[in-house]
Image (cartoon, rainbow, N blue to C red; front, side, top):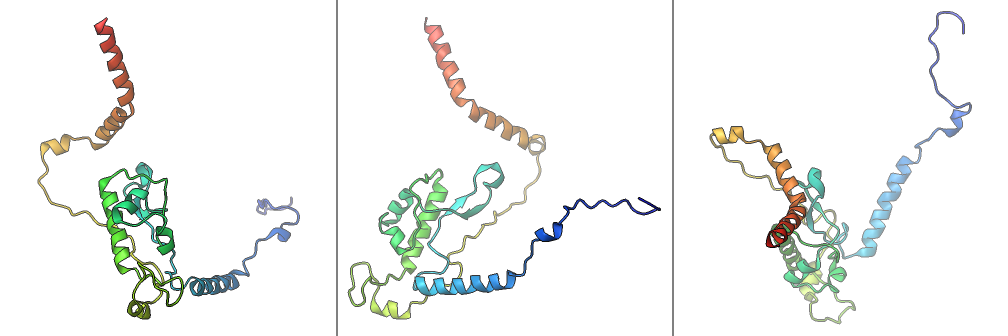
Length: 206
């Protein structure tokens, strides 16, 4: 090192130029994806290009449970309530998740309504041309049917309505975070406390 120069601070390997990641295939990759999408749309015609219908679900955990999104598949209870046989559902573009359980009535009703709306709009082509079975759409409907491109029945987040109220002393003194912590603690210890109460009752009887 000589003179009043900047001390080099480059942490390179000896032959780092050989390991440079290039991105020259980006435009061709974009074109390839586009042609693949078009080929898939032709292959799955007349089904929608976006794939099967998905349910509306809430994200898990405290961080994400305020948001609704598309789930994996409809639960068996939802299919039963909507009058869709579970074996038939995947064949008419409805995704099924046999593991999912409904934990709220609102979510259950939303998805049942979603299935009913989908069924009302659905056009079912016969497996063999000119051999119509029960449940297939009429020839008039088939003639006017088109392939749905892009998202269909999109999931829309509803904004809650807000009412203006006068702020009371009770509202000012209310500690929301403390209340949430307390309720979470109570929920966690419900089994332990029930066990303790049962043991205490046993001791009293003795």
